[in-house]
Every structure is written in C-alpha cells, then in structure tokens.
Image 1 (cartoon, protein in one colour):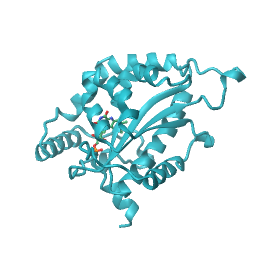
Image 2 (tube, protein in one colour):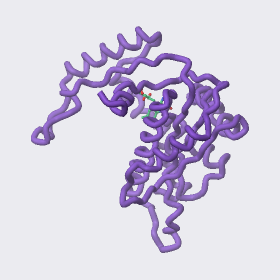
Image 3 (cartoon, rainbow, N blue to C red):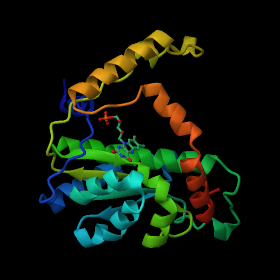
Image 4 (cartoon, rainbow, N blue to C red):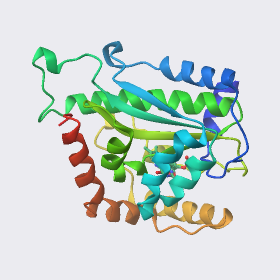
Length: 248
Ligand SMILES: Cc1cc2nc3c(=O)[nH]c(=O)nc-3n(C[C@H](O)[C@H](O)[C@H](O)COP(=O)(O)O)c2cc1C
C-alpha cells in the first residue's frame, strides 16, 4: 500500500490535542499549499481560508462557541489545536454584485462553494495527517455562524462553512467502521439500489461495539439523523446567515 492510501485509510478524528504543541511554519505552509491545490469548479476557488494559531487569534471565536452549549466541546478542541483553519464559501472576490449578479434563490452557487471549500478542507486534512498530526473537522460552528460572522467581521458573499482543527494527538484514534461496500457502492446499472434494513442494522451494531470499545456511548446511527433533521435549529440558523451574507 502506498503512503497516500495508507494515510487515507487510517483516518480517524482526533479530539484531544497537546495544547503546548506548536506547528512549524514549514508544515503549516505545506498544509495550506496542499489545500489550495485542490480542484475547484471552473478553477473558481470559491472559498477562502481563515487561519487561527495563537491564543489571542482564537479568543473571539472560542468565546462565541462557548456561548452555545452544543459547541463547548468544539471550543475545547479548537483551543488545544495548534492550527485552526476556517473554510468559508467565498464569492466576494469576483465582485459579481458589481456586475449585476445576485445569488438570491439560487442553489447552484451554494453547491459550488460547498464543494470547492470541502475539497480544499479534505486536502488540508490529508496533508496534516501525512505529517502525523491529528485532525478534527468542525461543522458544528454553523449553529453560531451569525455570531461568528459578526465577531470576525466576515464580509458579504463569504460564509463560514466548516473548520479544521489540527494538532499533536494525545490519543490513538482507531478508524471508525464505515458502511459495507455493498450498501454504499453500486454498479452504475443499479442506480435505484439502496442499502437493506439488515445491512443498516448490522452497521449500527458494529458502531455500538466500536463506541463501547472506545469508551463512549452513542445512539443508534439512523436515529441520530431522524433527530437531526427533525430539529429545525441548524437549517434556520444557516439560512439566516446565508441571507445576511447575500448567498441566498
Ligand atoms: C462536515 C463535517 C462536520 C463535522 N463537525 C464536527 C464537529 O462539529 N465536531 C466534532 O467533534 N466532529 C465533527 N465532525 C467529525 C465527524 O463526527 C467524524 O468525521 C465522523 O464521526 C466519522 O468519524 P471519523 O472521522 O473518526 O472516521 C465533522 C465531520 C464532517 C465531515
């Protein structure tokens, strides 16, 4: 197995970092360079990356996250990380408003910005893990996206989509099981096929075992999504912020 595939297949989120570790300028530059080399729609690079390293740079962001109980664990992760990258959808640099372009009622720019930013994030994640650093993607910050926009004074046409905490791991994270291939990958001729109930149940059991072995409890996999999509919290908050940023 080559090194790149090894890094990809060994991915496991790390949530405990050494708070005393600092990332060297060289490593940070390599991570950013790898991130920026990600492909993007029409080479549009519809994202920007906000970097947070020193305690004073992170302070405002952490204060905002700590005001939301559901983000307190994320605040701790970011606090102890050596580098936090906040990936924003960014349509501000084309100055399209000037040309009479509006994103109101358009879904396409959101798909493009989300895809571009996510690919850049994943490149950064893989690069960081190749340096034996730990990573944690932080999407929970969308619950306080409006507050983040205000406190960081993020300009219009820019939306803080997802963050990446990078640091020296203080835990050995074990790769989490994924759905079986037959529940995820289908021949192009079988585009109507979906996972069976048995496959999902078996996966849920596997995840419960994984949780037990790794010292935490977790509700059944499917109910997590039922609860999430029933709760109107995230969608309403995200929509409000996207409107504020003139992205919907
Ligand atoms: C878009 C996205 C947002 C995420 N947000 C959070 C988050 O806010 N906090 C957190 O601790 N983990 C977060 N994660 C990490 C996921 O929980 C994790 O990737 C998933 O459980 C699979 O575990 P693994 O990465 O260890 O394989 C996020 C992952 C993604 C892709």
